[in-house]
Length: 200
Image (tube, rainbow, N blue to C red):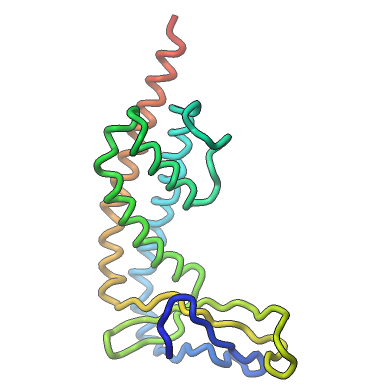
């Protein structure tokens, strides 16, 4: 079976679970609970921190933003932070450390997306790895007789060894702490700027 991200195969809708895989013991599934739960909880803090930092950037330096308002999508919020921390002198205190946290967030997001948008389809004893797929309904355009009603595409997302998944939960802690620290620093900066603007 191909392990290329984006590769898909048709899962037959006529059979319950046809083509889905999911031949995994309960024991192998149960041990995912701790690392997956930790990763999702940490990601919620990362997500809200990125949102807060983006909003604070707009509050502090709105006139320098090409966007009319803070973007909604996560990847666009990251681009706002990238641009401002790199080029805006007001945020120079974070210019050196941000690229490292940005790379870590990108790495963690791949795991998070596979877990949230996909499902554990297989377990490989060789390498102690879990395979994640995403299931999407097959839409029109197929030739009659080739695609059946209820068929779906199982798209390969990620192959992750268990030790990498466990290590990712440890990586979350420093990234989360850094983002919370940066957001607190920007809150102070925004308050000081507002105070100086209100001063006679």
